[in-house]
Image 1 (cartoon, one colour):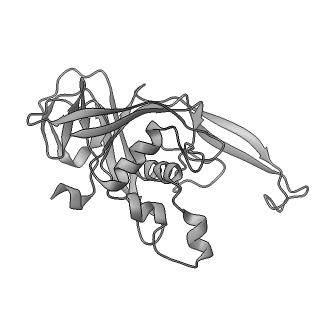
Image 2 (image 1 turned 120 degrees about the horizontal axis):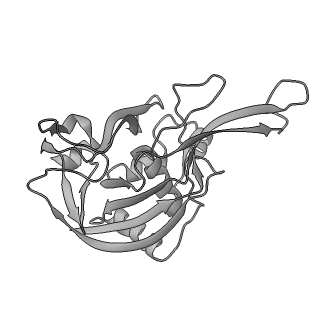
Length: 242
């Protein structure tokens, strides 16, 4: 199976959690499938939310409609990423109704995030994405959640992947509801978080519980590929699973 793979990293990243909006804005702990589709849309030059609003459309943005069928794997390189609260001023005139128009912003950022990304490249749109990345071509600047956090894309390659029939452990992020764990044993780490999977028609995220651990599995119902020396769970839309 033909696989596009690349290393994705940055100095900082911010994938805003919409459920917290008080004194501080918080981030998800990893890049998620919905954010990756947006990053791929930037690489390919597909329109996003701004264009949808200009057209008075309520449908999904172009990048999501075009790219939602991609089959993706995400391998965090440093386990649980460090987070730090950043405080800065937003002094554009419309930022705040306070005197002076200055808004003090508090955001929680990921520090030095790093992932290996895998995309099954077996159709026209995934092949176009592979061509752009292999030729170091991006229509828009890709970033990690917000444009203050530019993305570094490196080590772009095409490799082969083979479907695993027996899965005892998974290196990448995988869907918790598809996994059955073996009897409790030794485990050096366990990360679990409800991460955005896709968009709903009302503009909110669809969430799925994602896990990364070295715990032994009894069974996993989704697709897992052996790519080089890693077991990578492929995050698939429902129609691709059939």
